[in-house]
Length: 182
Image 1 (cartoon, rainbow, N blue to C red):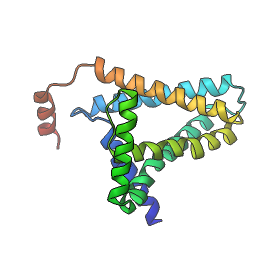
Image 2 (image 1 turned 45 degrees about the vertical axis):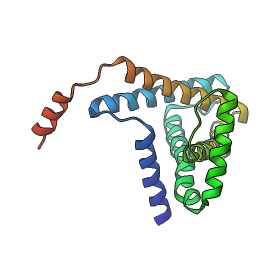
Image 3 (image 1 turned 45 degrees about the horizontal axis):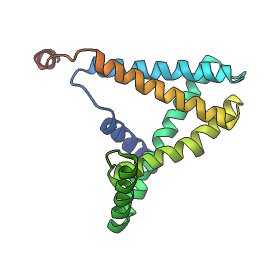
Image 4 (image 1 turned 60 degrees about the vertical axis):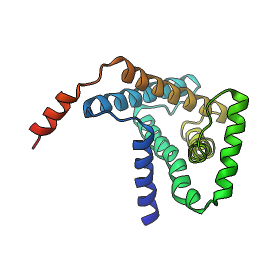
């Protein structure tokens, strides 16, 4: 039980680290809510389109919530169990490989930690979330993977559009709201 609580707290900390926060809580929850809603809608439409007879709203909300929790468990497990046990030369090797790939792809290199967390996310998606979605909604594996990739991309796009298009709240208003709160 202690391992599950540790895994959940690490997943929450990773979420806070990789999702840029705003001083305005309403703005942050608007981004998260819009991303979650778009994820549910797109995943539901795609699963229904792919022929799932189980794509009912309650099961879809449960399956998506479980899928997101399992998706977050991959990087959290890497952070909690793998990173502390990796030696410095191995991390240096991952950094070197990341720099080599970045040079070939004309992209900025990722640090070793980010690379390993991304690999954990990918493994969690491929080997846990997609099979659970396949069995729950009775769709082929490839279509389940495609539905999750499209839904996650849409959710990320919606969240980033809200982040970019909505003006940020000035710091004076945020400080005033903090002072007036009990």
